[in-house]
Image (cartoon, rainbow over all chains, first blue to last red; front, side, top):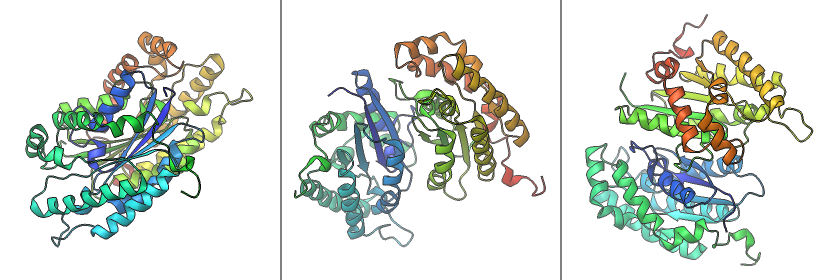
Length: 213
Length: 213
């Protein structure tokens, strides 16, 4: 499985790599690592700051179809939900849990018809209320991934204990790390067997499955 | 002029950085350089392989509006035309010169209403017929930039003499360099006074100009 692949990464500012003075984020670091290992990867980083699950639901398919020509060996990665859990002006969540989950299920089901899909779980250093929402969302996303047979990599626990990430976020805008935090996150995600299997195309997409499954 | 800025880079595979094992391309290198110099830059790389001027005309505004919230200090950069000049299956150009120019004028005029715009000229190592088309297109784009008062950085002549770029392209897929060629191109573009003036916001966008100009 070493032919050329094209990956679209959809998500929020953490996917975009906001705050990284190296201009790579975790996405750029993992793509560079795969290329240096000899994989012919073309990468499209489609992370957008402040995007909620609703924003991504509204745009992902159109932006993916413009970048993935018919017949290419494609991959789709998603990471969202942190902005859904962030505080709105009234102190509630920007998006209720039920809405986030409805968007996530629709996105992941539709995406799996197009290409092998990976979901990277949300995280957001932001105080106890936000973190309680993230906890609950992560539990639901884990179940959803299992139900849809889509690999899910949880990052919340790792980030919560990742000193360089938290230190850089504190020294920055409070949420986004710099090169050290993104490098640590890239190492963590890249070490996951789910990442490797998805990149290598060992996970079949739903379009390859029998229609009655 | 050191407040946060958000840049959308639209273009083709050379904007995407296709072939760069460092995952940066010229765009990523110039963004990282600006950030290391203390500029708070958020960058969206919206280069797409094989995109012609027609493809970019059809998508740029929607993708830009999703990424540039009202009130942000935005920049727009474009680099396209190489795929327009590439050979189609019948040995002609994928896009006639007149169509490319019509797309370019519409894109640049509309973009300048939104934010300061930079145009980076096309290049494509591809034999005498393709290169003659690129030559002609570059001349027209230079005039268009002058007419619209949009800075235009020509790269064709630089690339044609850039040994590392041409050597890496030869060793690769014939068109795309690797890290050395992209680093050289980033140095060349970054050294242009037009790049610096555009990044620093010294070039006003059309929306700031009197309506009758």
